[in-house]
Image (cartoon, rainbow, N blue to C red; front, side):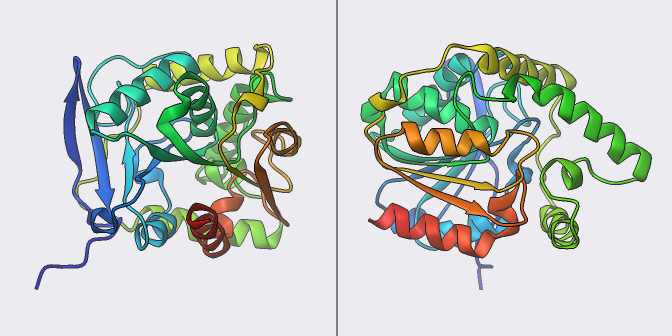
Length: 281
């Protein structure tokens, strides 16, 4: 019997577009409908997606996650602006032959998603924006400082920096962080390549510039958008999620209690249910 495909065992594939070989994984293809394209966070590769989220959404939808050029197992040079990353993502989406997609962007990925929909509105049906904020948003240009501070905290305490960056320091937050990090290790074969220092620094530059950029006219985004965050996001302050929801004409906001940047992963069961409901409406 063929083992059931899930995020732990789904094969990594590649597709050539221009001079880049994009690494990607896809599941739930038999469901048809509008594909859901996942856009990942700072310093992340395919293995940084929560298996519970990927398995949950692929139970009802065709999902695709990929590495941008120069990130993980994708070839090419990393882009150092959100606009260029959006162009890279559009190149990948077109190479896959998709006419229209739903976007699920987390953190940096949510910023790339906003650029995609402003550049190519006809390409996007709906968006889920988790732990993210708008151009020029409060505290976004300081992400590098927060990140390096928590990397040092992690090194000094022998912990993964995501325990500090993504989760609150309350008992619930600490337990949720441990559970999330354990889930990320469930795939033990054919893992993705870790991000290079070069790509990480390029992404930090993109975040700094994005945080200093003049605000975009988000009223141009007519697509339905689900905005999600924890109530205490240290990386991309939660006020940015409220700001996004207020400025997007067709938005729904979910703020999880006693949760931080990784609120969507801490409350993965509710996040999957809410996302499935939102996509099916």
